Length: 41
Image (cartoon, rainbow, N blue to C red; front, side):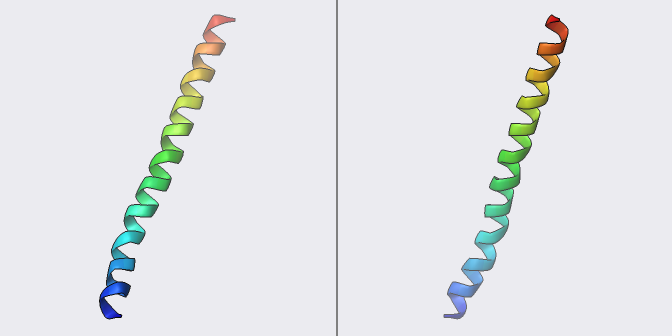
């Protein structure tokens, strides 16, 4: 059981990294699209 707790602790950073990585990419794409939209006006 100790090993499963250790694995859980190792998986948490990977989960947070992928989650916040996805959020960062979404924000980056949103800002890029917004910038292109404003330049077209």
